[in-house]
Length: 92
Image 1: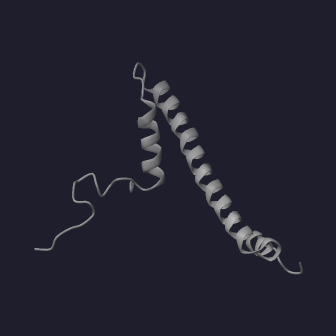
Image 2: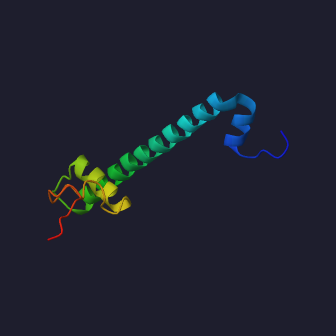
């Protein structure tokens, strides 16, 4: 295979185009799964820590997930829909 050190090139060389597309799908699926897992674990940790330090207040798990996702995405999740303008602005 002389000089092929990347998964995509090795897959295309050995399995052709169908193998290349299968590998691309698997890598995308793996990346999305990793992101979701990271958000779940981080959300659980934030929920547990905030419940521990704010005595008597139980934080909902959805609030923990939402907080973590807002922090890691820079608050871009649904931010254009929060003010009702759907991301478009008119010039007057």
